[in-house]
Image (cartoon, rainbow, N blue to C red; front, side):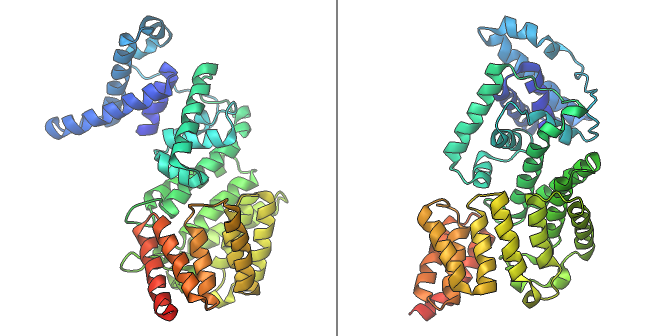
Length: 400
């Protein structure tokens, strides 16, 4: 109910911070009262009414309360505002995402604000997705909210003909929501299946809404190909299992087949984009019967193409792995060293982890051990730290 409640309060008050504060207060009150009085027949309505009443109280106490109450007089109504629209979006949550992704904001701001407000990701999780500090992301979110408030940008569902202006941002929201589920920022579990499942569900709805958008199909294909490997990605102890060591019989063959069909249909349209290229890379892995059968030269070429479409530093470590597998670890290490020297991915644990692995393959065990230790310091989940610690233990004796 979180996203719906916050969206309702934003629409009625025009104040993002007040909306989040009152929603939090409603959830806190629910924890206190439901344990004592029992869960109400309609929990969502209870939460919405409680949050709305809290907002009304806050407005009444403010110095400009009278004017705001007049503007948001519907707050006093016991009925929900009319949600009828001509967007054609049947899913409530996806409709709210399109609403939140307002083109008056920069693309990054749209995505970040939607992830925080409607998807429920923490500021730290969003900061990790954008490769910035938590403090930097917090400031960006504050600025985005202030721009909406100061410019009087309305919070309403866009009509169908305006949806394309917001589709890129919504794709970005779903992609990063899935990524947080696929590889959690922190915690005991590497995978948060609930987030993955929800991102895939929403991507399916988006694909049905926009069947002629190849990048939407590419995004759904990418998610399915990654999620198809979920059962094999951690071992019985919860430690990460690298791709080359995974039991491929545990991969979801039906999901892979569906993803390949989606990708092929998207590519036939002749409008390649970053999501389609990433899906093609994932398909190279998922269609190889054994790790040794992987076409690393093709993957390296695809990463080159992705780097031109999406010139961000985070592509480089993955490309370095592909180059190392195709041309030898020394070639991959050269790319990693250049990226490390630039400082573009400082604090990104996969950079020293990639460097450590390449150094290990080159027999430079002492240097590899140092890189593994750095990666362990930066890794956010127990699963990743256990895997890296195992690699460190394998490397350290050789270093001595």
